[in-house]
Length: 59
Image 1 (cartoon, rainbow, N blue to C red):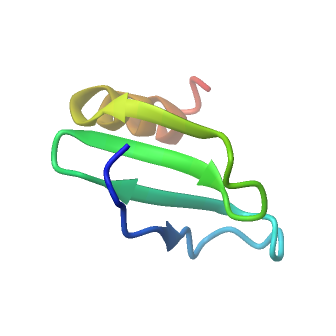
Image 2 (image 1 turned 180 degrees about the vertical axis):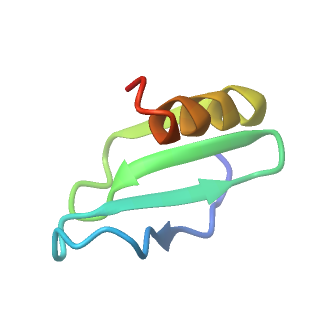
C-alpha cells in the first residue's frame, strides 16, 4: 500500500474511535482511526457512488 495522508472525518462524533480517509488519486481508503490494521480500498468512482447511496438513504 502506498504511503497515505490520513484525515479523520470531521462530522463523526464517536470520539477517538472514528473513520479516517485517504486517497492516492485512483483509490479511496477507509480505516478506523483506533484500529489501523484493516483498510478498505475503493476505486475513486465506486466510492463516489457509495457516498451518493449513503446520502440518498439507500445504505
